[in-house]
Amino acid sequence: MLRVVNRVFLGLVGLVLLALGGSVLAVGLGAPAPSWWIHDSRHDVLLTNAERTRWRDDGWWWPVVIAVLAVLMLLALWRLVAVLRRRRLAEVLVDTGDGEGALLRGRALENALTEEASHIDGVGRAHAHLTGRRSAPAAQVRLALEPHVDPGAALHDLTTGALTHARTSAGLASLPAEVRLRGVKHRAERVS
Image 1 (cartoon, rainbow, N blue to C red):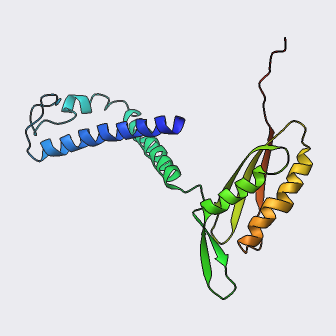
Image 2 (cartoon, one colour; image 1 turned 90 degrees about the vertical axis):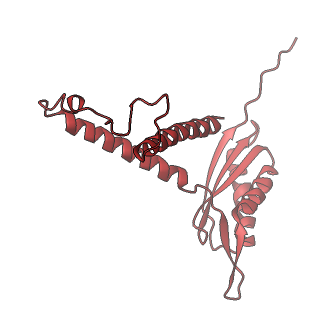
Image 3 (cartoon, helix red, strand yellow; image 1 turned 180 degrees about the horizontal axis):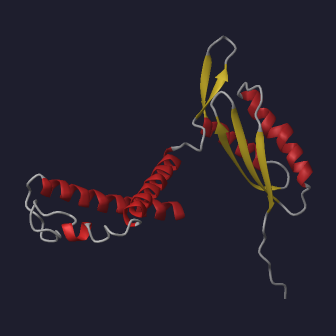
């Protein structure tokens, strides 16, 4: 839900900035100013001479403004890189043994890992996620364990079962995995 709100908010902010930037460009190129426009004509300036020189005697003003804008730009670039970076492995390179290779969809391997891990005795829910490079993938597995299950036994079953099957079926030399275990929470029931 938070992702949806985040994307809708970013989309609205982007649309507002696009509308403002487009209207500044249009008015600057000679289009008539809209009724809500803060200036009267294309020859009006954004900051008047008095506004621009208001803090000229204060030596700290412009360096602080430039520093704040630089930090905001760096934060925006960091956010853009974080959004554009793939967190999920799209495909895995499978060695076919004939010198060629085949591509296996990362989601297919994730689904197979999740399905097999969820059938381990005492596992309530399982979720697998592939990261890394397509020639050297790594798995991140989350298991929700029932209260009666020994975590060591569940980890051993996952390692010898689902992870080994995924590694051998994809023809990988190794498949490092990070496994996170947690207990399933049950709601308390009232006994009368």
